[in-house]
Image 1 (cartoon, helix red, strand yellow):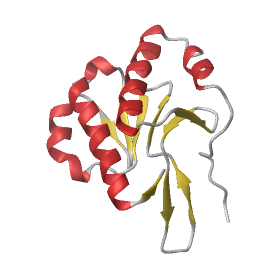
Image 2 (spheres, one colour):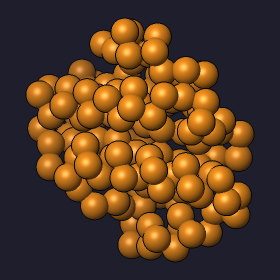
Image 3 (cartoon, helix red, strand yellow):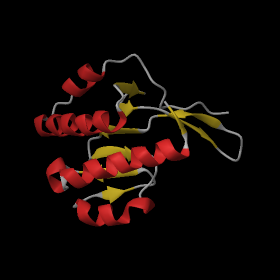
Image 4 (spheres, one colour):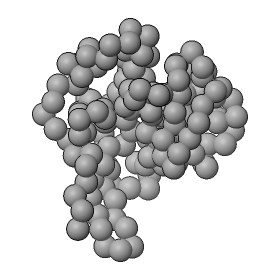
Length: 140
């Protein structure tokens, strides 16, 4: 069975964030980090080499595979700031229509810069997704 790549590490979140060279991206991720800490009440943890995660939930697939992953998180990728909305987006269509300029994957929200989206709507999306995960999964 394959091992989850997003396991918590002992790498410093502060050093990782401060190591982001682009000044605007670093400022953006600090704002997103504050939203996530507020939504989860959890401290940031590095998950792998380039993902910052908050909180934890336990999943179990029909195949029998199970594990733990962060409730929400982000990664300052080169092309876009990736924000992990683990619940997916289908439950949040009204918010998504108000968010602004973005792209999505299954659980990934991609934004070029925070100024492209409505920050208050983004915060409500993060809070709503964390609440959904806490209602539907075993969380820490």
